[in-house]
Amino acid sequence: MKTSQNIIITGASSGIGFEITKSLASLNHQVFAISRNIKPINDFITSNNISNIKPIPFDLESEDFSSLSSFINETKIHHLINNAGLLINKPFENLSFNDFKRQYEVNVFSVFKLIKFLNLNFINNQSTICNITSMGGINGTSKFPGLLGYSSSKGALSIFTECLAEELKERGVNVNALALGAVQTEMLEKAFPGYKANVSPKEMADYIVNFVLNDSKLFNGKILPISSSTP
Ligand SMILES: NC(=O)c1ccc[n+]([C@@H]2O[C@H](COP(=O)([O-])OP(=O)(O)OC[C@H]3O[C@@H](n4cnc5c(N)ncnc54)[C@H](OP(=O)(O)O)[C@@H]3O)[C@@H](O)[C@H]2O)c1
Image 1 (tube, rainbow, N blue to C red):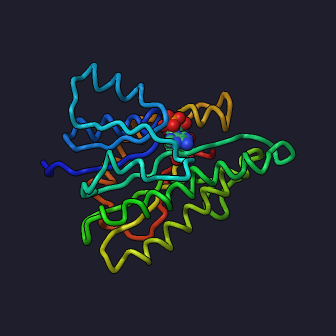
Image 2 (cartoon, rainbow, N blue to C red):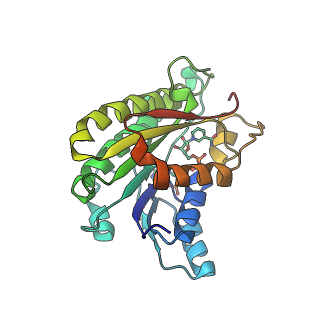
């Protein structure tokens, strides 16, 4: 078994991120679990008597990331999983600039801010960053009305991943993205009401956990599509 790793995950309170958090904790890793609502994480900690998850209540739309210091301090971070996402499903006519901007704030700008904030916590030649993007954020894939802000922000995250991988490669910090297809979560229900995905959050979380722990060092600057359906 691998030694315990320090892993930060955003969007830990629900869907895929909650399953990733539980899975990493069960493998004895130290998990720093970021989301606005930490109740589901606290309930899980209490009911399973777990000590290796640190819930961090934090809004990724915040201007100031310095309050994260008190939770993370100088802890060396082996893996960062940027999983949090915001999807506002509105047709272009009803989509305000604020709706558009908020999706970029969570899906792109917060990823930049968090990586900047953690820069000294990463370990040269060891750490990896995994950005969770979407099939909709890949050039030439099917696009859907109502998802302009979401899909374009995920597209930005994909190119951000390729560019950051170039920037960090001298340090040996690998940066990749997984472009997910449909997974049965609250977000999917917002995007495609009534659609039933053939992948559960637990199944996708298991894939992501295995990728991050075992495979992420084999890739750099790659956007890997993880999808068997459209959407
Ligand atoms: N489900 C799919 O079919 C699908 C497909 C492609 C890609 N993805 C991607 O997979 C990732 C996980 O999605 P999911 O389906 O599991 O969604 P989900 O169940 O809606 O979970 C989204 C998570 O993001 C967090 N979040 C949102 N805004 C935040 C903010 N301002 N600050 C901190 N945390 C915030 C939420 O936590 P709080 O509300 O507690 O803050 C929640 O934990 C996302 O990046 C999504 O874009 C999902």
